[in-house]
Amino acid sequence: MKLIQLKKLQNAEQDQKLNKAYLYFLTLTAELEGRQLPLSIIDIINEEISTINRFSGTKKALLKQIQLSTKKILKTIEKILNIVPKYHYQNKWMIYGMIVGILFTTICSILGYQNTWNSLPMGISMGLIFGMLAGKNRDIKVKNMNLQIT
Image 1 (tube, one colour):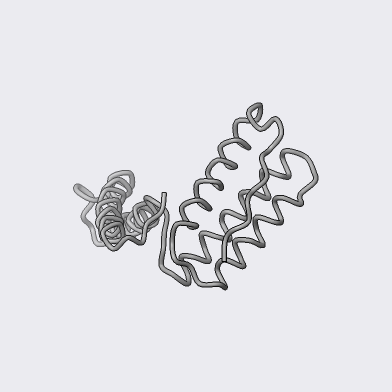
Image 2 (tube, one colour):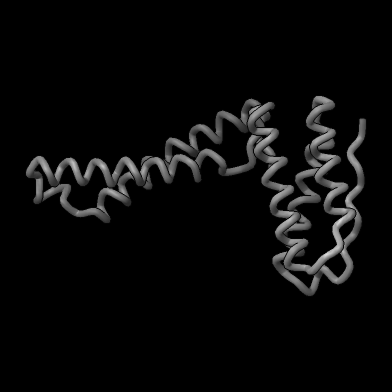
């Protein structure tokens, strides 16, 4: 089963955000079309494409619809097929690292290590760096397993 073609937008070049979201959606669907996908996922993608094709509203509302459809497709393929976009784990683990850095700084300041770890920005930045490194390693593993899309 093939994916439905997305209609070309009229005057999309004038709105930069809409054009960017539209081109990303086109790239996403083109890349997914080249993969072997189960019929249930193809049905979900076709449903989202037909929703965008049928859409009649303002450009701002169309932008929101394209973004919602993109998020729904990405969440579905992540949940079912473990396929993720670039930098997915890096962004995710960066947030986790910052949270751990804040907790570590707070615990160290409570225990009395004011000279070294009392600085909250230091804890955030250290957590940010460690989270980015951990996420980058996961992204490399996913890319090597061919489970990453652009």
